[in-house]
Image (cartoon, rainbow, N blue to C red):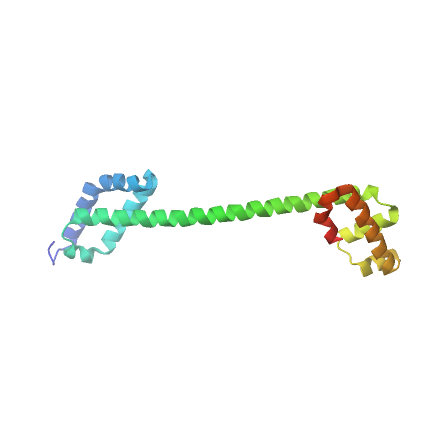
Length: 177
């Protein structure tokens, strides 16, 4: 390559490189990537990079080997980025799945509790409903105009009845009461 190549000659040289090598470089890249579109993107990136660094052309002795080497390294970078992206997506999907399962369990437990109100005596049911709505013992006592100790006693009765009704499943929701 001449040290003083005029710009028109650079453009002609680059155009000829593209025409001569683009199809075979795409096939070469596709061998690594297994995807024609990705291979074309990689090869186009290589040609863009080649044009941006055209001042280095004079140091290149074998453009053929140079182009194939650039494509090979771009393919490796692409595959590494894909692997990282896939790993991140799998991790995210796993988190979403676990979150969805936990939310389902929470909602189903809450639904079962709400549906079990009928098995409680009326005083327990009133206390239990307010406890499910997030009220503290003191707040329930004020709201129902009863002693805080009565609220605690009614919650104990509700726990016992629900434990009998739900067995081991009660371990999931009794701590909330």
